Image (cartoon, rainbow, N blue to C red; front, side, top):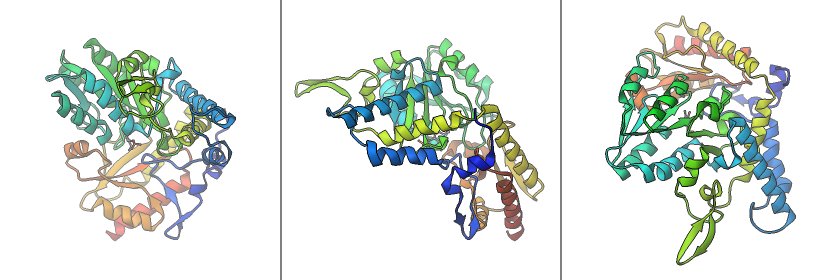
Length: 405
Ligand code: PMP
């Protein structure tokens, strides 16, 4: 593992070394998307500069090399999640596409009227809407697992909601509004007692936790590359092999077939069956590079760095008049807050004018915000490359913004 040196890390992120509105950029929106280290940018550049070829097609050296690298990247993801087989890793455009894939294949095939999909109230729209669509198609029902006043999942309610009709439980490992860590280690075996499969949205979690899909016994696990320092447009669906094998394909096209005639088509095996069309090879290589880059750091040291910065930010703003933290979680990499009487977007605009980038709004989680009685929050999210100086700039900028409003 590499020595954790913030100066060395920061130097690897060209996007951080720019000005925004005449001030050095302070980037505190990494939960929306992370900036990219040079090795990831180089992986993409090198691919298009000298390795580009279509994969699994043609019969020349360049395509063979591209295919080998593409499949190596799949193995990097397999080890990253500790999946039992590389065939359990399906490339998608992101977490959103992976969730839609599960809904439109596994769920659409298996749900019938009266079946229930339990979805936590803390979810991102990406882990709600695909279930509503497939519920509409099949006559199944989406049932909310409520959260408690402190923005954690109501586990007692969850246990009561589970029943013989429960077919799917969809839950984020870490949520994106408050950074709440859902107790998936307890939720998964409980769901399995009722024969339900569990879909874990790992979009926020893969960045901050060492995930082991076998230890979790997760049936499906999804994430996006771009929050993990990798490019956008690439993501992963992990599924247990037996589940993937029994699922029908979703998109039809090249590569996902064995044989096509006008009388009918036979499909490829897993994972090819779910990867119709020319894939985002550069994205896969970029994701593998990002995982390798991220793996070089001692996990605990990295998370301690983030936790210390977060605490510094909280301590620096907590005395601001009318400022209220929303569902503050002890070990998160992000936090949300509001300033009563002031619109979140007005604060975000004043911060932006001082070079500070953070997220204001509903964070694609309307049901959670509705439960909180809020139209939006401000969210500070912290990554490996942030510094004490970033946090101090944020604190000063927020004090100034609040004094003006
Ligand atoms: N789930 C969570 C918890 C997220 O934070 C996000 C991204 N904001 C998503 C799902 C969707 O990810 P993507 O837009 O990359 O598909």
